[in-house]
Length: 399
Image (cartoon, rainbow, N blue to C red):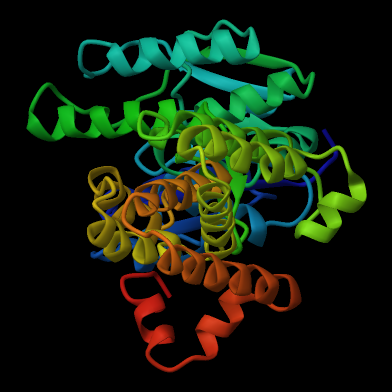
């Protein structure tokens, strides 16, 4: 209990409430710094929080989980108290609780819908972590330093609380709930309320699945598995690499280590393509295309941008790629190896029927050249140095 305490608040367009919330928190915890992650507010939220004495991080619109993660990175070592921007009530019992993660349950229900999002969250926490919770979506939480290390960076959006509980419990840390007489602005059974809860449900489901940390250090859901209906075998091989890969990168590193998920893909994808195409050149084309897209998927949207025009040319599926592109560009999800390998395999398999003889071997040679180049240098760095390609690569992506 002698560890320093920092209070984190994620706020978006909370000009009317954030000042009262910060003032109450500073009064209740006079030795704690209050850090507000202003999540792209379009009103005076940041100014009101600063006037009340908070340290404010002015962020682009990232979502709750990423705003709290940015605030955590700015906080000194020690315990954390997480609080919603419009909360009213005393949170001292959370900080004085006996668990590593202490979650506030509201003594009285306020507003809400029909309970679908909360029921799904309860189920996911129970299945993934073996923990029973009454309020799995509560944003009022006290975290020990050990929970902080296990849970941050948080899952994005409204899935951050559920994933935090899962991470803490799976790390062997103690999770408790404390019932408190708190009040907050509840969502109603109107259009905005149902839209909010639908987003909350989607974020929660994605957050409970496989996650990975991207090049900015943001923790995002891996959604490459959504390509499974189009290409189940390659997607499964890529997902195995997403879940259990080691530090090895590149063919030489994987072959040197011998028993890696990368070697499984290196052998499995061409063998699968050989069965599908009954052609050595077809197996080479599919395997090299899958690897090329894996090399491209190092920045948001890059692999999908390359896939879409090629998919139109060879009549490969485009629907799921069109749906995923805006979410990938906005860093709300990641394709992962499952998605990138599946995209390349889809193009390769669809190209086998259209490229014969010399045309197929030219394509194989070009893809082999990309593979060799990718072993020697970064394809992403090459794209970023090439005029025209660099501008297209950055199009639609957050700075």
